[in-house]
Length: 155
Image (cartoon, rainbow, N blue to C red; front, side, top):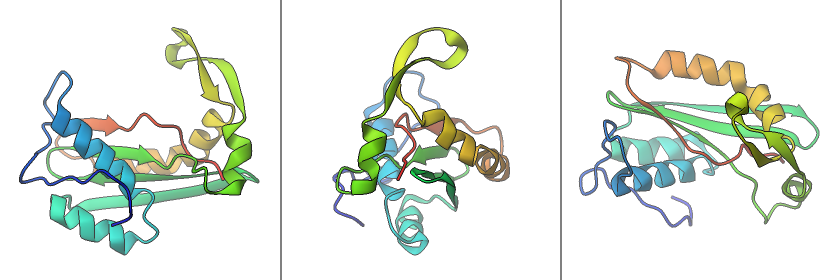
């Protein structure tokens, strides 16, 4: 595991996919799951997921153009499917231009205006078909889908 600071132990603090409100164990599970998108190798992710009893996962990576690429990670077990995106990292110089580009954008369903990274929709578009295919493949029994709400990474 990397040097990230969230560690999930399914036996001690299990995730409750049927929760309708804030659940600290769910937050810990999602935070820990989002750490895995930063792991360099799928074998490292797989070893951690085996401990959590997630039996299937997909890594998605797409480059659309210079400074626009993203990585997403989809994992599933018999109860839940979790989607996380890799965010920009300040230690990587190539991420700096992305971090500096923000636009006031109409949010989802045009309900509110919020600040988004200017390239958010472009990077999401770059992986959308792969993401949709992964969800279709990994989701069984109409299990809940949990999405990490960070922005997709650009590099």
